[in-house]
Image (tube, rainbow, N blue to C red; front, side, top):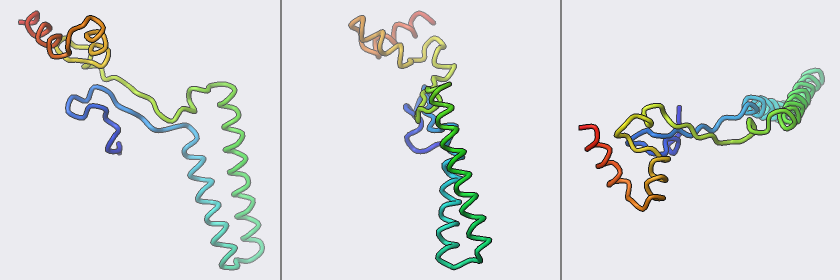
Length: 123
């Protein structure tokens, strides 16, 4: 489910922000296993259980570390925490897009004037 600030312009829905990285599941897995290990050690589980949980936590951390190094070498952009994506209908005539707003400002017109011109040309 998208968070409150995930839609940049909620009314028009022009752009969407994603906050997922390929390593997020590995981070969750490592966090859950570390907490399970800590709770298990506090509650004094049998030795084999503590060794098992420590091995799982260590393997999870190594998996995260190796995945991070691999992605750092091969695909750095996938490690970014945010991505912006414009919707397809933002390119239809009459719909103002963030790029259109920048182009309008560079020409010295306002976005409202640009929208009026587009609506007049479509009528």
